[in-house]
Length: 309
Image (tube, rainbow, N blue to C red; front, side, top):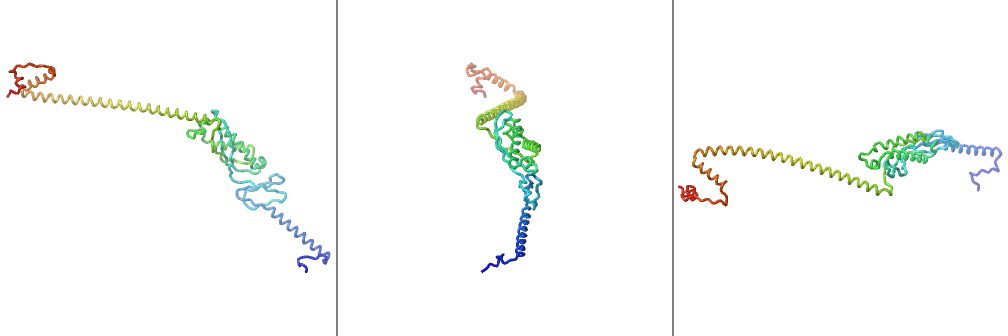
C-alpha cells in the first residue's frame, strides 16, 4: 500500500525532478519573502516611541500610533515611553543656612522630549533618570542652603514660595545644556526630616521658642488687661465725680427751696419760730452727758411736762 502524498523519485524523469526542485525553491523563497515582509513591520502604540537604529546609530523615531516599516536585519527597533513618568529621587542630607542638617525626600515628574538625544547622550532610560536625579539634588541643596531650617519646615511665613518651579527651571536648564533629550515637568518635596543625631536637640529648641512666644503673648495680654482696668477706673471716677457734682447741685437747690419754705412758714408765727430755733440749738449744745437745771415755773419745763394748755 503506497501513500498518495509521497512522490516516488525513482520513477521520475530528470525534467520532473528539476520541476519539483524549482517548485521547492519557489516555495522557500516565498516563505523567506513573506517572513522578511512581516519582520519589516512594527506597530507604534499610544504612549510610546519606536526608535529605529542602523548599526547602533539612531536614524529616526516614530511617535504617531500606527503600522510602520523598517529594513529587516539592517534596522533594529527600540521602545521608549512617550508619556509623563514619576521618578522617586533617593533621600539625602543637606545643610541649611543656619547650619542644621536635614533629610530631603522628593520626586519628579518627567518625560522624554527627544529620543535621539536621549539615546545619544544618556544611552538608556535608567542613565537619564540617574543624571536627572543628580541635577535635582544639586539644585535643591543649593536652594535650601539659602534658607533657615524653620523657614523650610514652616509653611506659614515661609520663603519657599515658588521653590518647586525654580528647581524645575534650573534642572531643565542643565538638561538642555547637556542635551539629554528629557524634560522635568514638576519637582515636589514630599518629606523633610531630621537625622537621628540632632532631632532631639532641634525639637527641644522648638519647644523653648514656643514657650518663649507663649510667655510673650501672656505678657501682652497682662499689659492689655491693666490698660483696660486703668481706663475703666478713670471713667468710673469721672462718672462718680460728675454724679457727686450734680447731687451737690440738686441738694443745694433743695436746701434753698426748703429754706424759702421755712421762712414763709416762720413768718406766719414768730413764737413758733423762736421755739423751733431753741430746740434746734439744743441739738448742738446738749449731748448724752449734759445736765440741765430748769426752774419749776419755767415755760420750757411746763412744756416738757405737758402742763401747757
